[in-house]
Structures are given as C-alpha cells and as structure tokens.
Length: 345
Image 1 (cartoon, one colour):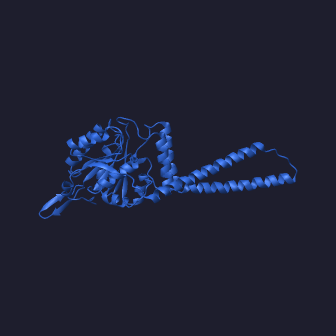
Image 2 (cartoon, one colour):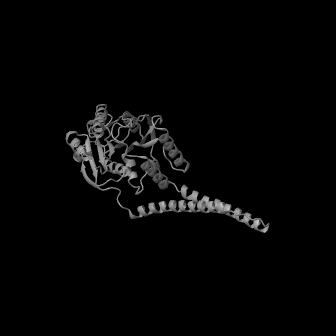
Image 3 (cartoon, one colour):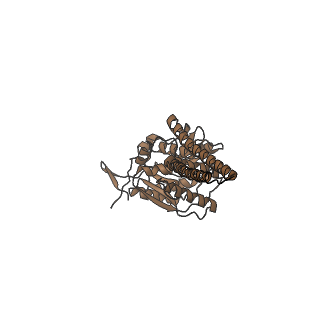
C-alpha cells in the first residue's frame, strides 16, 4: 500500500521508479514484440499508480551480430520508455545482465530483470511490484512446474538444482534470472567483485528480505534459444565451481579410497606370493592402470579449473565494456522523488 510523503503544503504519493533490464543477444526477431508488451506493462503500472512515470526499460545489447542495436536506437527515438546499452563485444548473459543492473540502479528504486524471449510471464511483474511495496527487497520469479520442457531438459535442470543444494549452495529451485531487486540490494551486489558470475547464487547471499512469486513459463515468442546444451552445461559447471569446493573435496576423498584399495590389493599380492599362488593378472593390471590414470586426469582437470578461476579473479579485468548508450535524461529522473517500499500493518 502506498503512503503519502509530506512535502511542504503538498502531499506527494511516493511511487517507485522501476527499470526493466532486458539482456539481448541477436534478438531482432523478438525485440519489437518485447518492447511492445513491456511498454504495455509500464503503461498499466503507471496508470494504477504502482510505479513512477519516470520508469523505463533498459535493453542491453550483448554484442549482437544482427540488427538488435539498430532496433534499440529506433525504439528509443519513438518510445519514451526505451533506453539502451551496447556492449563492445559479447560478454555473456550474466555480464550483460550485471551491466544493465549496475547502470539502472543509479536512477531506479527497483529493477526487474527478464529475458527478451518473452517466456517469463509479464503478468508476474505486477506481483513483484506489490511485494516491493510490502517491504521486500528481492522478489524471485519461480516456475510452478516444468511440464512444458522435454524430459531431458526437465531431468537435467532438476538434477542441477538438487546437485547445487547438496553442495551447500543457497539457490532457489526453478528460479533463473527473473527477479526484482531494490536499489539497496544492487548497491550491495556491486561490492561483489567476482569475475566468475553466477547471479542466481550471489543474490541470495545478500540476505535482505525476500519472497517468491510463482508463474507459468511460456514458449519462446520467436527466434532461437541462446542457451544450447553446451552452454547450459558450461553455465552449470561455472555455478558449481564458483560457489562450492565440494568437487575438490570429492577428489580428496576418492584419493583416500583408492589408497585404501591399493593397500588391500598390496596385502593380497604379498599373501599370494608367500603362499605360492601364481596369478597372471594382465587384464586386471591394465584395467587398474587405465582407471587410476583416468581418475588422475580428472582430478588434475578439476584442480586446473579452480586454478583458472583464481587466475581470472586475480587479473581483475572488467566484465564488460560499454560502447554506446541511449539513456533517458537524468535531469528528468532526478526531479522525481525517490520512493522506498512502504507498507501498513
């Protein structure tokens, strides 16, 4: 519920400035419909006095090779809601999303992140705003079910969430990057200087009041998915290695187990030698060599992955470079009173 703020003799209704951040990579097919639908959402929220008339959408072009940026510039010229950032090269979904969040937080009271493919339910954003007015700093959009997914995608996704949870990572089940964050949570998120980004795991670490909104995911409106199996597996592996050392501990445990087995095998060989038993053992010897060799390579690769992440973190290279931007006039935004989430018991 909105509360009035007294300003001299006038009462001003504190409505928050909302920015909807949309990472875009080769989205020229779906972008016109995305802008159209998000404009309708902002129109409706402003009319219902849920958000300020200074609210906008921020389209982040993640180094697209098609006409995505040209469309953003065109929409900016004809649609007062549309603003944009163009990254100098493809930095990846998480970096592009972070670029939009960090840019939007300077003039927004709350920010909603959503993909450009229109699979996330836009109607859920209204519930996000309502929860923000109730005092929540983070609102997670969570899928109600995965019945629309293929068996393989459903099984791998659910397996990923369960695996992350079992490794001690605080991650919300069936939540991607469809969420609302308040300005103060974004201010704190900016202090996380990590190069290996996994926002789904980083946001829960902030610890601010949060809640969930459940929704049904739709089919992609147009274009192709930018997350094929290879990228999905790489993203999952990055998430695991960025937030858990359990794989390293697993390798250590495996080393102890193999050491124990080698001791047992050594005792068996010594006893057999004393008793005069002759064992050819060629097959078992070759299999054991291949097995132990494979485990060693796996362990070295896993350790190398962690060392590689440390290497990237130590260099402190920027996550993204902004080439161009088309942003609303900050003087107009500054004239709008800042709002904080308000509620009545």
